[in-house]
Image (cartoon, rainbow over all chains, first blue to last red; front, side, top):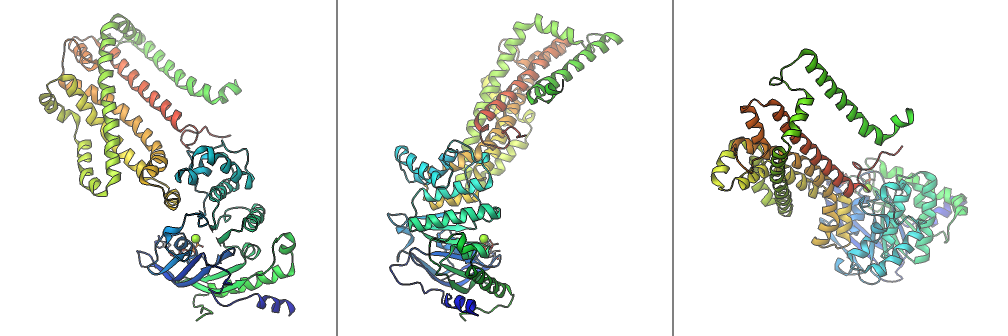
Length: 283
Length: 266
Ligand SMILES: Nc1ncnc2c1ncn2[C@@H]1O[C@H](COP(=O)(O)OP(=O)(O)OP(=O)(O)O)[C@@H](O)[C@H]1O
Ligand SMILES: [Mg+2]
């Protein structure tokens, strides 16, 4: 009984109620997405991303998680509604303190380029000279534990290593907002846990803001300060869970009773969200 | 024996050579055994003799054919790549022009060669034009497909990093197109040789500056069959050398990273 109360206390039913410490990084203002073939991938969604939070999107397959993330990355435009980045248009993204990086579901590396070339791509495209990008590439690779692999080709690395290269490439620009679409989905449990811990440390140390998509309940609970559960047909926000477990989180948290309770709660919400005729809590 | 047979490099060279030796040996033996007359089907040794005896004329003819081949191949690569770039820049241009590229491809060169030879005064130039027409299409279609087959994830990545048109072309489109481009080179180099030989046949020009096709025609008239085979042998040799050259270039460019050129890991 205690445990249940504990969980309930950590839950907020509002999708857009982050603590108003400072300016939101992204505001999704009743943005929806209907693809050219008529699929309503996303019903109008309201969501704010506050600085320093680790926000996770979870939900059944096809509920529009990737669509929402692409909207936030401005890779696609909303059919209706709009988005704000740092209270303005997308054109201010990329400036000092307003950098954005995206980690795709696949490593998405250039096979013709060595690891160093792949990681330095964002800097090269921004016109940073080699003399200044070199140390930054080395530092980014070190951060993901791949120092010494600069001159390998992507095909010479394992799947997990390629994914880490992809993360190093995202980190090399020193982003303020990091978007990740199921980055560890294809990895084994053990590697995933390791990368999750590394990512969490990185997020904490560098005061990043992360938006993370996953299918794993454990991953969501372990990493997030806030979990958004989405439902499908059309894609929408079903429920929101705030997790105020203090940092740094480690194996102690993973093995705690609280962790198990949160997972159970999230799991039952996810089951609701997967029902064909689920009703959004907010409506 | 076993480690040698398992060595990939040894097998690659030795196996085709052994097959060749068996074929040539069998051929020589069969001709001698049944005493086939030279003007019907010459022995390999007759062909070798003829090749040695007529070496100066035949090599001069080979040089002429190869020059036309290389000129045509060069034109096909440059033109084909340029046209592919144009196609990729504008969907409208591709839709309007692609049917004509296909038209070029399906029209047999033997049929258009006489017209070109009449239109172009200089015979060498006319032959080069014919051979170029034959070799052009694979370059256009392969390079176009290559420039289009860009990984969507990488395209998104470039877009997110606000890469300009030039940067995207140089860093993404061209490297993605390279494997297709080199596949085009292999096909096109062989076709340039075929085009050159076929055009020479149609032109039938004699005198100085005639190529291997003319030597074959001439040998046919004179019933000098070994010489005919010798000329044929040189054409085949040229074709194989071209192919190997292209394969080597491809390995040089893609060896480090592309699946097709990476040695199979064991
Ligand atoms: N380019 C597209 N054109 C048309 N429909 C699309 C397109 N991309 C996605 N959809 C549709 O939109 C819906 C949401 O897709 P989305 O990729 O956002 O789901 P998701 O939540 O990321 O799913 P998953 O967990 O399987 O990755 C799906 O029904 C999908 O079929
Ligand atoms: Mg997805």
